[in-house]
Image (cartoon, rainbow, N blue to C red):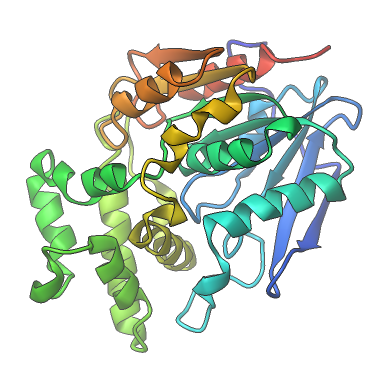
Length: 318
């Protein structure tokens, strides 16, 4: 069934894993306990995992592990206000959480999958723990670089000038030429709840805009939820204002660690949010990887989920 998504299934096991600094990470497993292990890393940062993501995995073939990264989804505490400690939420923390979860579930090695920010996180994890990675499937490829962040928060204003003007209008004049995610992060930590509410709405409106060139795009209803907006905006701006807690070119410079690990990279040609050159550079630096370019997709969209599903199926050990 590699040409479509699998039917929706419920988890056969789930829990909250104590990690560090008072965080508890929600996790769930779907499929079959004897299947090929695979872990799914959601986007954002801060999107949380969804029931729809379970449908990437053949429930008769895979033991799929999905979880909500620190501060979001069903994990606790939530990054939904200025009292949340962002200092214990970094890429290194998330990589350690993935390893804790693997060990907790008694999994020796697994396929690593992810989309968007989940690709950056998956690459960071795989470079640190290559022995634990059977293969990788990554869709909407990102590396969390300053170049990508500057593109998505500033340079893309050339494509959407009216919406970008509204996006930057929320930032004080003195900060508009600087690090826009950092300026938003300060607004989202303001003691005034109305300042935080407005900043979250403006940030999420821009998030919805910069993926809107994909064929068949519709506004994402998740941004209608004030609680989701608050958590999502807080975590994205935290990570992006710190270059995703990665050294300059860290992911590309570390690709040698992944030699010998097979991978399929899926990317939409209409992905203005994350231009194709990043996926191209990763593919060139990763012997054994295959880049699948979808001519009718963007940052998701038509055929994207089915292509990710087909890629996962190709690594079915059974």
